[in-house]
Image 1 (cartoon, rainbow, N blue to C red):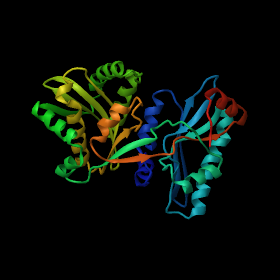
Image 2 (tube, rainbow, N blue to C red):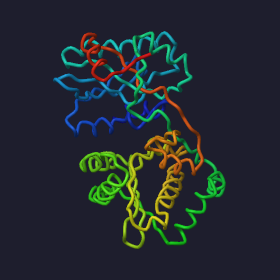
Image 3 (tube, one colour):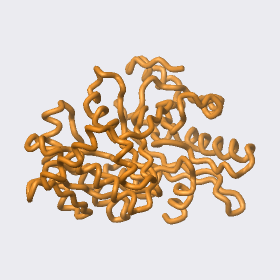
Image 4 (cartoon, rainbow, N blue to C red):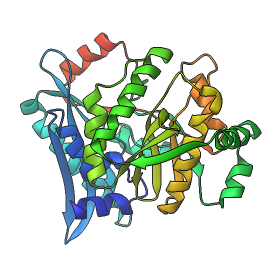
Length: 331
């Protein structure tokens, strides 16, 4: 486990979703997990966490959140060979595992044609859809707190101060039983915003498993003893990531969500993080995420665009049928 995470942490594209603990979390839902590593003379050339996800009619997909992690300090020929070995392995076991395709969504910029061409040369197709958000907001939290506040929009600064005036307090916990607070509020949020949350045990297992490795914390904003807003935030390497959030319908005028994220930022700085990934946004004013996007943009930050899902057909006949059923057009 330690050597696995060491490689992920050292890699510029390393991510919580490629960590050992994320694989353990996926196993809780009965999903098979492969941790593939290619090494040569004691040097790791590539690593990949692969999750087997169900489709209909007894078929499945292989899914890898984010990238095939290639050791870029090695010669280009070694990098290409390592990537090919991983892809060939997945092809070899696809029939036995009843898998139609291999899907990944690497953190490639939509304009990174060089990296994208490598994937395409191996048969990957660019899907019009994505599993992870295609656009994220990253906040550089290296500046001192006063400078971070100055980089925010005036309304955001005002609401942070307003929450302080109303004596909103924020605490963090890794106690599994505290997830009940989150689950109560996520149901309220889902009813208000019209989305389907994960089952309660999804968030409970996430806090329990990742919390055991000190990779996640539950933040709770309260008015006295009354929880008003909450968030699950991961800490992996030097990046803090906002995974899930929820808030009450009550006392919204006291701006608990602003106090919540300001405390997350301060905690992330204390943990030597340099980036706070605020998660997915959508700049279309008519999109369902328009409101949360405006909220997140108030903290400042940099917009990061990704290419989205890349899919490699592993069973051509069934893949073509899959294309028809989901009505996807690929590049």
